[in-house]
Length: 492
Image (cartoon, rainbow, N blue to C red; front, side):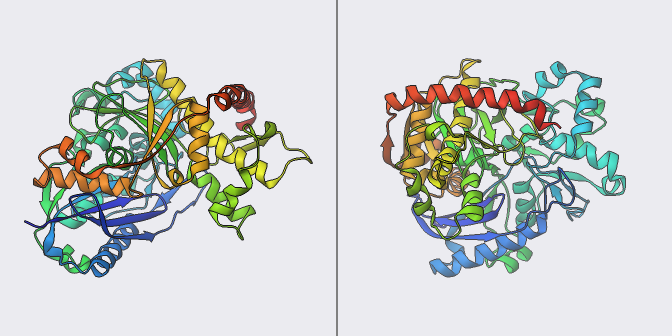
């Protein structure tokens, strides 16, 4: 058997491909970008075949970088962004671009289904509210507004399952992505066929369900020719990007919590039962027998990327955040609401807007940069507070994503939340999590405990400054009051 593991991550702005040693050390990695499409207000789409082309290029690049033979790869793991609805025909051809997690076109459908079936019935099965970002409303959107595509559709697939199909020829859907389907029963990872029928759908419209570390197939000759891999490498079902990132950060036991610092923000609290809150997101973890109570926000690292693009193109990210260093905690009253594409949890408002409050002639670019960093931290704290309402307690956070490389941003998050933040070695937590799934699935690791012990090392720990924390509690109240007061205006 080979000695290396290949991890693939289908992100929102790019795919990431990495080869790992069993120790978790990165041998080679590549990023390949692709487009976002905004054809109408509220629509955000991507082309699944563009994902495939980028991944093929990424795999060829890491094989060339590493100089290893692909025959030395023991297994392939894959993760992907949530809430895709890729319509494919019986031959596995994608029939249209997929609405992605940022897409809110199905708002009218959500209102109708809630009225007809009732919130309680849906929530009791799915553990999640019926909202336009999820997969189910998008399936119904195709049925109502694109009937020609809908009639040709055999299955609706998720991002990772589509790429897994292109690599292996096998249709699948992993448990962790099941949370986007509202007739997926959260407590036992089966389907409620009656609820599917009452929604106007069929349980047959999703592929067969698998544990995330289950081997679903092997690389085909055709896929080998396109990627540079050898035929026959086993591939596991994979999982949700947030869940794989959580695993790759070392979170696999109840109470452990991952803090997300990628394009989007949020947190994932590991629990050992289906603990739901209507304002949060619940999904099975990629680790069997565990679930993740998640807060998923639009505002993460993407907010600073946007700020740099529009107001600081001549500065590096380090130079930009250096402007915020001398600014006092709380940015002298400048508050940022990071709702740059509506907002997900816990306010669930697709009309929400990004807002800077408290500007004046005495404020500088540094104030705005620090307020941007703090606004993302406030959104994290908002989700943690809501999670505590159902008894999910968090003592410390394990950070992942590009934002975790910033000492200032990590410290701000620690100060706002009052929680110690630990940062693992790897910048590639999500692809590492996917690779760990492959390693467990093919027997490189005996179990998840061994995999985590062998691959995850904490590089630094940042404790909260409790004096700053007390100050931030005051500004947090302003943040919450602004979000509440502006809600009627957002909808105008």
